[in-house]
Structures are given as C-alpha cells and as structure tokens.
Length: 435
Image (cartoon, rainbow, N blue to C red; front, side, top):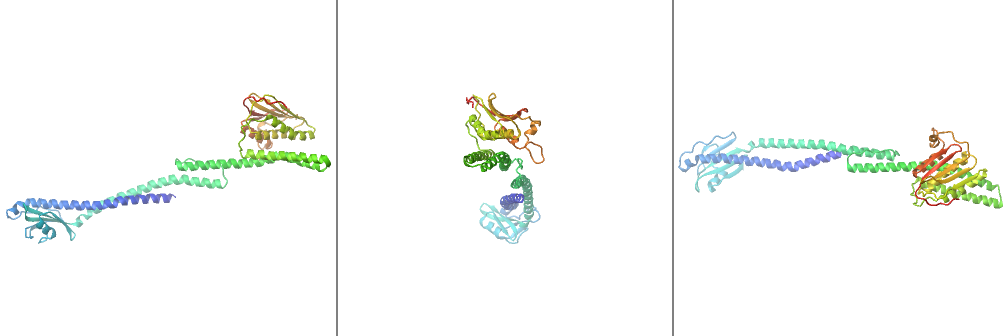
C-alpha cells in the first residue's frame, strides 16, 4: 500500500509538471527566438539610421557599428550588392524582399536567423541593412533555462516523494495495525483494541472494530458464564428429578401416577430455569411491569416445599404488605432466590425462611436457615471459583452478579443463623397482600 500511494503521488506530480513544463519549455525557446530577432532588428535599425543620410545623398556609407562574435551586419545597395559589412555578396531572400516592398523581413535559412531592414527616402528604398546570427547562439541559453526548469521539476518530484512517503506511512501504519487487530480478533483474541490515528475514516473503522471486539467478548463471556451457571443451577433440579423418578419406579397405581406428575412439574420448572439462564445470557430486555412478589413467593413454595418437607425441614414464607414497586427482571430475581434457597437446602439445617419486606424505598428479601453459621470472609464467600483458585462455588457469585446487574445488592447480613439479604431497587408503594 505504501509503495502504491508513493508511486501514484509521484506519477501525479510528474504528469502535472510535464503538462505545465513542456509548453513552458517551448514558450521559453520561442521567447529566446523573439528576443534574438528583436536584438538583430535593433542592430539593423541602428545601422540604417546611421547610414540613411549618406545613402539618400549618394555618398559612401559610413562604417557599420561593431557587433558581437557570431553576428553579421551588412549594408546592401538598391541593386542588391553588398557595399560594406559581413554577409553574402549579393542580396539573399530577406534582403531582396525588403528592397521590393520596403518593409522589414525575417528569415531562418541555413541555420541563420536573418533580419533585413530597408533604408528609405520616403517611399524610395536606398538600401537594406542585413543583420544575421547563427541559431546555435541561442541554444546554450535555451539549454541552460531548460536545465534549470528540469532541476526545479526534479526537486518538486523529490519533495512530492518525501511528502507522499510521510503521508503514506501515516495512512499505512494505522491500517496495518487495524489489519493486525482484525487478524487477532479473528483468532479469538477479544481483548484487542486499536488506538486513534487522527484520521477520521480510519478511526471510525477502528472504533467499529473495537465495538465488535467488545461485543464478541461480552457474548463469549456470557456463553461461558451460561455454561458454568447452567451446570450449577441444573445440578440440583436434575438430581431431584432423578430421585423422584426412581421413587416412582418403586411404586404402583395412584402413587406412581402422582410421582410421575410431580416429575413432570419438576421438568417444567427445569425447562423454565433453562429459559431463564438463556434469557440472562442473551440480555433479553425485561418487561416494564413491576415485580409480582406474590407470584415470586408462590413459585418458591411450589419448587421447594416438597423437597424440604421430604427432609423434615419446614419452608416458611413471609410477604409483608404495601411493598414498593420494583421494576427488576423477574428472571434474574428468580435465579438469585433459587441460588440462595438451594444454598440453604444444601448447606443449612432446620427451617428455611424467606421474608420479603419493605426496606425503605427498596425491597429486601431475607433468605435464612437455622445452620451453625459461616466462618469464611464475605469476599471469599462471593468469589467465583476457578481452577486453581479459592472460592465457594459458582452459585453465590452468580447470584451477586445478577443482583448487581439489576441495580440491587446481595449481602450476607447474619452469620448465625446464616441469612442472606437481596436488596432490590424500589419505587412507589403498590399495596401487595401478605400470604
């Protein structure tokens, strides 16, 4: 690309210089021809004036003025014979024409530039002064001028080359960096970013590439998070579904039918969990409707009452009245509560309590059990576990990230008994009934 830009710039400069230089060079040559002709005519006029009186009175012509080397000056009488000076012995074409029509004549023959000026007495021609010079006398002047013009042209081409080289580098380097960034992006490096080059069009392409890289990175991160989150969120429902189906296999009649029905209900909840995770991974826009706290509590009862009852553990659900509206994603809240209740189910003991309450223009959801408490630091508790790193699973880290994505917070509010609180941003009061 750089070579192409430089070559095109130099070619354009050469064409422009040629278009103006060639006619100018021809004009210079013509100017020198006219100038030399004018100089010869001036010499001839001077000689004609000096000898006019003598020729009119029939006297011998005086001496002609001195001329430079290479220039001939001669005086011819009315018969065409040379009377003095240097030149042909008889009148040539220019001299004969001047004798004939009493006007100045120019001629270029035999490599000579000839000017014939008549000496007249009124309308009567008494003689002709002939001035001539070799055309080759003009060539050094023309050649010197052409050489100076050619040198200036070469300097202009050189300057064009230097400027084109600088600008080609200024254009090519950002484009090369852009191409390198695009290759890295194609190889899966979504952290690649380009720097502004100060060229509007290139910067626009670079910003588009940066946005693409960022979006692809976010998409891949969400897909990876979905894989990890799905494996965590589906592990417990799948285990419960398996146990329920295994239990149904050992029964018959109505009990088996009821067990299969419950397994189907678990399957529906499992499918909804998958849909929720996909919606969160894809950033599906949430509804503008306020969160339905009654429906949320009822879903928790349907999902967890049977599992906890099977272990002899009660599920206590408390929903306060007159809760403020909260326009958060029900999908995100459902998954956060699923993580918290599952954490109490897996690691806690005794009654699992879910209390939805008004916390002053926010909704607070307390999820606790009667366990012996936690001894780890809260920062460690919510750290997402990665290979070779310390942490306490993906569930609490996922729950906190979902809560923060909705503008809320998830905190460990009590260690013994263990209680987690989800704070959701609220608005005006909506008068939700207690169940």
